[in-house]
Image (cartoon, rainbow, N blue to C red):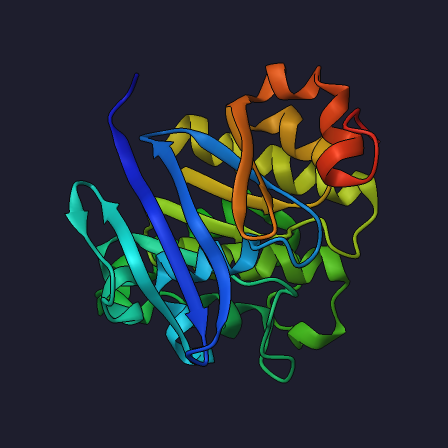
Amino acid sequence: MPTPILTVENVHVVYGGVILALRGVSLQVAEGAIVALLGANGAGKTTTLKAISSLVRAERGQVVQGDIRFRGESIVGADAASLVRRGIVQVLEGRRCFAHLTVEENILAGGYVNRPSSRALAADLERVYAWFPRLKQRRRQPAGLNSGGEQQMIAIGRALMTRPRLVLLDEPSMGLAPMLVEEILEIVRGMNEQDGVSFLLAEQNTGFALRYADYAYVVENGEISAHGAARELADRTDLASLYLGGAVAAD
């Protein structure tokens, strides 16, 4: 097995000191892998990602038990901005673009965290445009005027400007046509294969997620209820009825 870039071990998360959202979640992301985190809405996928990125603290959430290690070092309680500088970035559910800023201004916003030189910033921007040529055509357009798929590309491009080693991608298919979802996930696969970026992908659309992932975990009611190689889980029709409420086969 490749060395894990991320290890989540027996993590419990409480909101507001009273609501137990995660109950002993454990998972690993191997270096250079795409790992899917599957489950219904409200199962605990987003909380898991935010526990890793420390964004859960902004919602009065706290990791009260367990450990989260990035490249072997515990990051529980770390400042979210410092984690971005260390190589972990989260693309939030719902895209979260700055609607009044241009496409290019949105993308550039992700690049300043590492205080790059002007030349490095320009090089990173061109790298993003190489992955998303459609965005270069619309770079002067306000982000809010772009389609949902293009806004998802903007959000991913902004994350790439941080030069991440691990991207936490939350519900990239939400509200998008299947053709656009496939286009975005093909780019994710390309970044993974060519640049070695690891991905933890939280997704309800099991068909797409299992097609692109190497390994997958199923979360139900804040607990991991199943895990295994993505191809093996795709063949388990019992997961659809027991945990996901629908077919695991491709849409």
